[in-house]
Image (tube, rainbow over all chains, first blue to last red; front, side):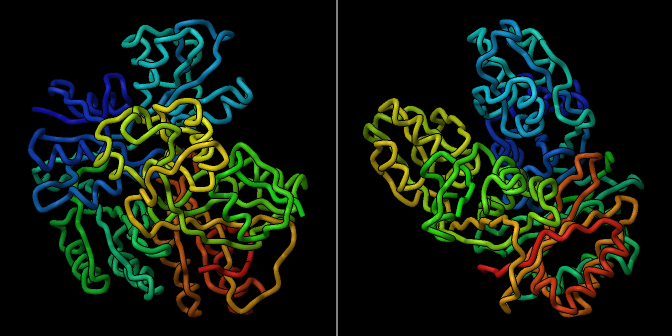
Length: 271
Length: 271
């Protein structure tokens, strides 16, 4: 089994991947769309990408990747939720830190911590938390905000633990694959619906198809179509499997009303 | 008139601010929440912050700032939409570029351009596009993705224009202030509604209050409460002014059903 994920070694994606399958061969990619493309191109059996964080919300690049790379073959086949505990890592000591490096989302999750402890210190953004740890290993004046695991990998010490602004910090990852999971009784189905800008009541009608069948929605998120300001795709997660009759009926009605419906997959829910 | 905005000089926020009022004194701040705080603290008369881009969607930090700094005194009093045309700027020439710098959202808007023209070149993220231009002025091997205006301000040449992945690229800014605008007949009202996780049909009911009164929604966006995964605030923009009877009725009903409703302001819509 070969799994694609965001690299380099020591990312939170790696923690999530090991929770899903700790015996697979791991292939590291530079960005989320490269992971999704690798699944579609059959370079890997599965790909694992972050989709949503409890502090910072959806990962825009992951939503875009779902739109572009999900097909009849490539689908969402699972999800994983892991706690995110950021640490402050450095080769030097805490008083010598002049620059803090991390991924923009990690920096956003720790913004109050940084303001309170370091004032207006120099901040550098990196492509991943593991990249930050790797770069911080070059100088005692640098510190990375990254996972505890990455300290060992890049020769850094953990100087502070749990530095995110809210102790409770989770990231949900999704697993992309080329199989269709069987119903398990605790399934979710993810869809994308395009609602034309000139039909403002359409979202209400769509939600009515689920409400009238007692289908619970666990998430609804808008994302620009990238064509015009105010023109959105809606990403909806609902409880139930595409093989359930009432889910099928609702999706048939939604497709009639919305015009554009993309089913991303049905899979066992982790939350 | 003193207006607070994101600095340093040469940001797209500055273009938006000049479109709103080109005779005001401009005060530059480091981040979006500092701009909102400056309005609440009466350091400035107005503050202008980016809220949504047509390619990359909502600006999370701006949504959070609305939740924290909008009060009975501080409200949204206007909006501005400007086209975003990114340029590639450098002191050297295009063949000598070894590093590209920009704000993460600008990099996201130009990701295909960078891949196509520069492959896996070194990317550095900065706090604003103007910061990128300022840093790129230090070396001929650096290029910034930033506004045409910032080239002149930081001594760089425009080597390529319109490098965003879609020609049509707009950002919507909102104006925060301490006055309440009168109705103009083309108004929007922005609200935040908290819907408890354990009431999955609540969003449908809320939307029904608007649909049944023929109130069009121009935007609906979910944002994590930061308390638990799956627990959301909904940011909704609707057509009409809070002084309109049907808007008032709908909001009264929404408040009864949702429990938590925050009105962010009524203002003349730009789109």
